[in-house]
Length: 599
Image (cartoon, rainbow, N blue to C red; front, side):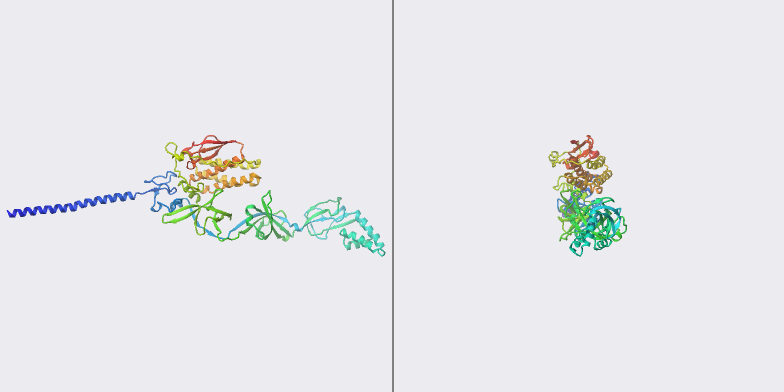
């Protein structure tokens, strides 16, 4: 009996111990497994890949696909791209910078030296030009110099003149000679009268020796040089002091160079000029500026810079064209910051650059306003806004600005920033209250300016190229749009500003400057949206130019799309009333309306 109880107790104890071990082993394992599952799930959620566009970093999607703006393949977002140090900066990945061909350079200081090109003409030295006149009134009997350009030597007889007054004076001299011993004063007076007519003592002595008055009197050259003009012919009667010839000594000549207003700060008296003459290939002349006009010619808008040059062997002839250069230097300041022109975007009122910032969060660019000084050919002096050692974008700046606009951050045309545009359509897009009620800002009224027909004819080719630019964007053709923009810029550069006079001159300078600035980087833009942004600036300039000058004889329609430019609206010109939208092309071809008609 006791033995059975012991067996039962041992069995129960064994069972209890087994249950306890089973719970500890399997129950703990299940809990740990459950915790592991939860941790793994949490890790997968936390590590979910975010996809973005290399050209439009504001795009964030949870799965791969195409960019809703440009259609490029989305790429995984790197951890260090999640945020930038400054919310107003434009972050760009290395891939985006490579695709946009963005290059940077460190800002430095240097002596502001500029090569100024000058054009001019050879002229006579005014101090070596004289009029050969007759000191005796009478009739021209003979001319020994019969054409212009002939060389004469000092003392050479150049003409013979018959003078009744001289004949009378000679007879008075003969009579005075007869009573010379009794009245010597009378003889001296008669002799002095002939000397007043520039007769030399030897000539007077010859007259006294001959005993008879001379009918013809020789005129001798006062200087050596070339005859520039012949003012008399044989048989002409001339008065005392009347010029017979104009003679120039060309042993030394002037070269008068044109200095435009924009180059005036660079040109000073004493600057060294190197110049060449087309008819003397291989020869280079050097001399210093001896005189600079204190006033500007009101018609040509230039001042003259005079260079004096020895004329060996008479190589330099008056009216020859000369091309010269001056290595001009402005006074050096402590902070003469020099940047390439490609780094600066200029709206006509504001000049901006993009400053590069590199940190643990990646690379970003911040727009900064700068104040520009004089231009140095391919670079600008920056008066304020940049410091030596800062790194700026020198190529691809328009791509950075386009990314800033799309991201709703401060940009060249929108310094305050605004909502990003990510595409739209009339059917499925819900617009916010603010965007649906926005209207374009009112511009200052353009004043009409009268221009002549020559100026109107010069402006007409601009419209042909502008309309080609517009049609290319309507067709979504990036390459054709860039080609048309380049042709428009070429036509713009070819317009001679001198045909605009008075008030129209200042107006043309303003409009042409804005248009050139809007067109200068179009060929470097990588996507059609950036080109369309530039087209918007070109259109505004062409509309203002049309209102100011009215050069065309045909009707132009000012058309308006309220959805363009981040729903702010944008205009363009067309010769047809039918809407063909250049800002959206085929995606929204008929979006817009006729806002104004220019006849």
